[in-house]
Amino acid sequence: MILLTGFEPFGGESTNPSWAAAQRAAELLAAQGREAVAVEVPCVFGRSIEVLDAALAQFEPSIVVCVGQAGGRGSVSLERVAINVDDARIPDNAGNRPIDDPVVVSGPAAYFSTLPVKACREAVAALGIPVEVSQTAGTYVCNHLFYGLMHLLADRPGIRGGFVHVPFSSDQGAAHGQPGLAVEAMGEALAVVATTTAETAVDARVTAGAEH
Image (tube, rainbow, N blue to C red):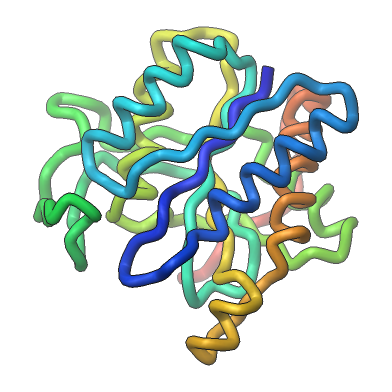
């Protein structure tokens, strides 16, 4: 079973392409004969991890791909690392605005994704979809959920998981004068991330670093 999650709208937006893309990816995976489900999570510190934890218990997936919106980015971003800090520039959808709080008290400073991010980047790029390995998932609810996911999976051996950021949708990008990507392309990218993970035991040894 492959579990994909996407967020509800936040920050004044009426839609969140991460949720639409997660739903589309689940449809594409099901059409390939793979068991897949998409779950929407709230853009709320704490509660988002609770919803994810419940989904893990309900669906017992072997692969988890959490997805969030990164407005302003131009590529699908495969996140490499989650850090143990909440530092919110804007309030979440429940009005919470933590500053320098840990995601998990006494948790490790960081967790790495267990998705084969470099192999996934190569597979998505082969589709002609802009993609990168990202070295930061921010410090808002996306990183919060990513860290929470990896902390939950630390006690669930055999489940691989990680986080992917998607740009604004094409319509959002046009409205904001920012890069945008069609939701269909996002869904295709996420489906390939999931299938590549299922078929890749050891990540590709290719460069995907950054100078800054």
